[in-house]
Length: 541
Image 1 (cartoon, rainbow, N blue to C red):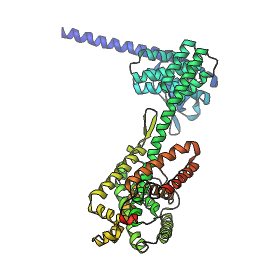
Image 2 (image 1 turned 120 degrees about the horizontal axis):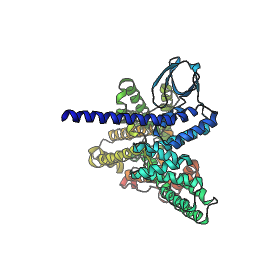
Image 3 (image 1 turned 90 degrees about the vertical axis):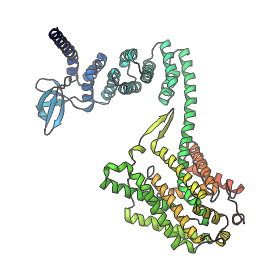
Image 4 (image 1 turned 180 degrees about the horizontal axis):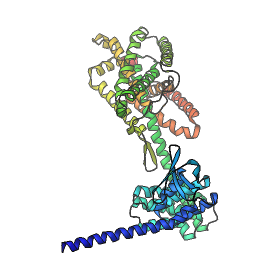
């Protein structure tokens, strides 16, 4: 009995294999003339054969069309057969385009390339989109539906309908319905189909949908279809305006976080010592170049750990920039307290010297600072596009702000800084070593500027002039928010960043900055101490 059962199963498996091989051979035989036609008749003949391959709807044609797209499809001169030919030394290695079987080598003069032009390239993209609609992979089907939406190839409509009848994934199904609607609107279908397509694209609500709906509203369609398209255009425009406002708000938050990082160290030093530090931007530059050096070390000695380089660069930039800041305070600034004009001129000269030193060491050209993999790419939230790099910078800026706030409120060093800020003579009389507090505070502010340089290296060019683009904005943030007040710096940075981004679309980048500067000047006329003025006897005096 067992022997009979085994014999039956073996015969059944053999029959299945024979049927499968027969059906595969039959499909290959059906496609073979169409594949051969790709190499005849010039561009027009290739395009006609391509359209017939697409209409056949057989996924076996996908490798053939991909080879044509990659420029690997050739005609063998000896027998006129269409083959896939890829370079193998001085000769070509030939394979069958349908079965993938090895056809041996051939000299370069033994084959002629099947040439394509721009019209054929568009047709190839549309054909691949249509044929991959039947793929077992949902991501491939989604990509194919998007390709059909962009190409709007009418020949893909039957394949789309067949794919829709089998589709079970809701997201892929929605993409296919939108692709079908785009094809219908482009082809000019009957009125009921046009109105249904308009409703589908109104739900999509992006700029591609808006372009199609605007075309229908201005076309020779029926009054009902044009009316539905006009209503859909108004709805999509309203939705896009909402998402554009949110996008500008995100850009403003992103710019505000950068300004916060650049200005927060200046707020500390300016508030404690009253020093107008024109070299603060160079501390940002030093942090960026420290990041570059750390990454170069990782590239040379531990390329596999490159994603960790930015984490190593953070403490390194803080220590290097902070050390430079302490050296500047001890060697130059300590002799100029109470003389703001001389301090401004001295720090301006220091900024020029630091820039020239960096040019002499690293050269005047920009330096490449790479982004780790976890800071690369972007994601979409509704109609909002958020890059991972900007998102991490926003999170980092708020983390630095919170850490500094806790340090100033909960540590002895923070208590000393606040005491010196509010009443320097009294703090000195109470035994606080104000000179040491000044040096450490300047180092702290410079170190935070170095952290800002690490963040800016991910979104801006690392060059000797990096800090100059942020020093004026940093002073505006500090003055607007209130000198020496961290909460004022936070509110000022976010307000000015958001205001800048909402003005840019209407006034341009340069005029937008000028308008912000005028706004700050008028604001300071009414509130000379900024949004959040510090309180204390020395300040009020």
